[in-house]
Length: 210
Image (cartoon, rainbow, N blue to C red):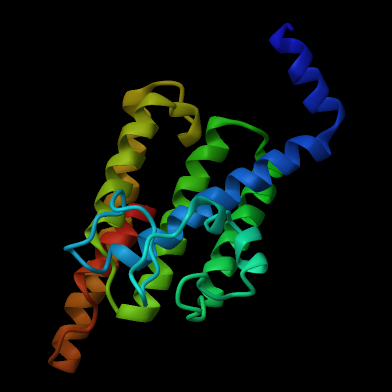
């Protein structure tokens, strides 16, 4: 069947497209939960091993790792040891899926939407980790800065430019303004209060946003 037929079907039945986007968002939310759990520990990788229970350390079967659904089926408890599963996991999955729906509904299925969703997901992970551990891992801010610069150059219209060189210049300016303002506040605060007023993670986070 011609691909245009599938596109026409999705256009004429938006609920199907929204359902696909919601499921995709929930899957991404599940991965964000892995990042939130593992990034603060430099000895852990977000890629391997496969998901496991943090209490009994036994691997989680694929059918117990379906976003949103498995939590309801298991009634919020590990199948192996019956330890409670934090409600945070399902909340992150639901929030991410909702963000995907709203973003694609507003911007359409476009590169701009993907660009913004990368930023939203990065900020969500950074916010939860910062709230829980008072740190913002470099893996979030550094890769976010690199992604923002490269994406601006490759897709300049995201910055409202036609030339990739102008777009990356805009991106660098935003980086310097975002990080520079917070850095200045950190220096002034440290001088006034005679102690560190703001961590380096906050500076890098604002540089990434810029």
